[in-house]
Image 1: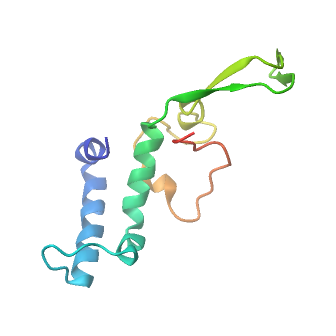
Image 2: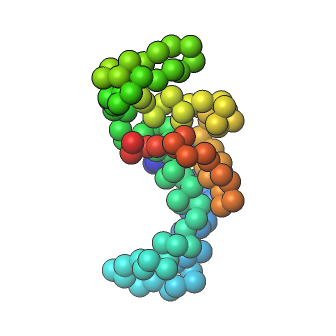
Amino acid sequence: MTFKMLAQHPDCHSLFLQEHMEVKRNRSIKNGDNLTMEDLKKMTYTWQVVRETIRLFPPIFGSFRKAIEDIEFEGFTITKGWKVLWTAYGTHYSEEHFANPERFDPQRFEEGMTIPSYVYVPFG
């Protein structure tokens, strides 16, 4: 899905490629050389692209949870013992947490941007 998103968003692909070329240029990588952890740490835009991709296409749909006590939620009572299905889509596609949630926008994960706990849960 990352490659699909980059193909559909040439501006993002350009920034992604530019970042990779910069790492390569500063390192003078020879054929067959592996990237180091330091190289990966420099790829901040790449990490934004990955995070945005798995926000839009989470690898885990959701999961069942068992209520361990009675819970009042938005006027409804969830009784102890009931199983509740939560999905990542419930928050990943919420305008309350992500502006234009259906748009591919890696920069929403720029350093310094804060996302509340339990809002971004691509792996549960």
